[in-house]
Length: 236
Length: 221
Image (cartoon, rainbow over all chains, first blue to last red):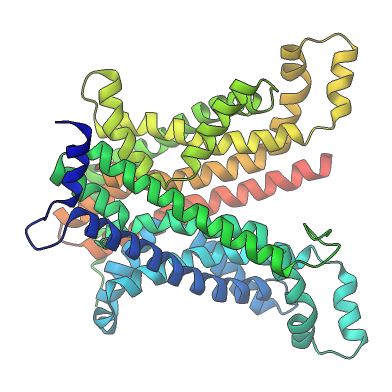
């Protein structure tokens, strides 16, 4: 079989009007949807928890600390099983929730702990004078965070957040364990069905690399747009 | 929903979990040692100033870092038997995969470590007549290792968590041990919970130790 006809197998109908190309595109769509939804959740929760880690209140510090340690010290695969198997059997209401949402929760909260660590580091890297300046002009602490600290810190953490955003694309592959038809599951199933593992893995790997690179460029664009002159990467 | 606490007994550990636990630990240690050695070589290649070596190392590191570990595990499971010319089990394949994959991550840490050494140190080594190899061995690498030790160990904790992904090729690790027990004894929920607790306890304890070490090192420096 020559190379061209080998690749043409991808155009072959699987029997239900769906070709392997259709299938890989839908799998890519699942990968990107999981990653995008989980990323939004991770940013929201991560910024909240990361901020709480820097406030003076002991109970809030304890809570946010516990949050980070909990989600950081259990492997993602195990967390997926917790959301997809354990919690629905403990809380039957969760059985109505689609698996997609459960996986997004698992991946999003797992990543929120990492985002929170970056946000905390970003806030703590700001000079203490920024807090003092805030209170000197009569801002309350929440106002200081809202108008002074977080706008600065969120720009400082953009580079580490870029690598977390690329990680979330890669980590979404663990969703195969919950049976979601994303790229990693496609690789396993289509590889076996076609007996063309090398070609299928190659396609899937390229799609992952392209997605991660796309995220990288998007974040670099945002970084360039929002940079503050005189700060990290903002010399222009 | 009530948990069946009688699920947690010695039989569970000796019949199902122990074997997987030792595999996960072995895999972590082998990949850590092999990964750090190989990673250091890759880092030295990238900083060598010799273009072909730089390219090889850069392509290797960036290539492995741009695809998910799940795919890397699948790739190696496919390719290792092909390269070796004979079928290998999922466990043997995992050792090779994790060593080569983690090397990419350790090499980035070692590169940062080597670059964190002031250039004056390199010049000082050259001034007293050390060769490149001697300079690396006696001056640069010992300091780079010391500075990067907490980061290397944190990466090892992540590595330990990542070993659970050998699930994709069906290797029998710590997680698989719990899952098998849950399936065989009809108590999957208890099994997954126990797996989460065991991973948490191990990783949390290790990360606290790393934190302590970090403080110790920070004081001396």
